[in-house]
Each structure stands twice: as structure tokens, then as C-alpha cells.
Length: 103
Image (cartoon, one colour):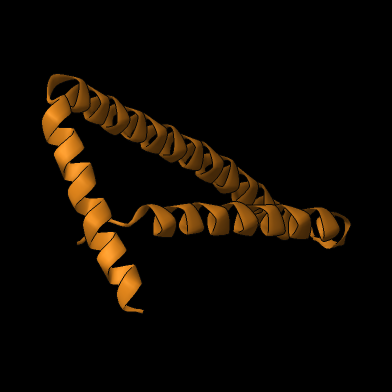
């Protein structure tokens, strides 16, 4: 399976947060309308939603840690190889400038 891009991962986390919020709102609205059996299902759903929230928070923390590590690695590379970094930046800028000027 391919890795998710940052934008896809952020969209997925936002969608999951929205689903959890909608499910919580639905549970609150139907709290008084359920029988005994439905109440146990409601309790299980609440527990699963709490677990999902914890996993989502762990996923966010992991993503933030990875992003921080990637930023530190890039910073270390630039400090260790300043001239190569400058050349790479200039090359990328040249390519982007050429592409923009063609339009």
C-alpha cells in the first residue's frame, strides 16, 4: 500500500474527527429514545468512539513526530552541506522559473 500524502492524511484525520463528532451528536439526540438492549449497543458505540479518538490522537502525534524528524534531518543536511543546498535551491528555482515563464 502506498503512503498517504500529507494533504490526504490531513483530510482523512479531519474526516474522522467529523464522523466522531457526528456520531456523538447522534448518540446524545437518541439517548432518551432507546430501550435496554439499545442502551447496551449505545454504550459499546461510545466506548469504540472513545477508542477511536485515542487512536486518532496517537496518529496525529506520530505524524507530528515524523514531520519534526524530517525537518530536523533537512536542517542538519543544510548545515552540513551549505553549498550543495544552495545549488539545489538555485536549480529548483531555475526550473520553476522556466516552467512559469512558459505559461
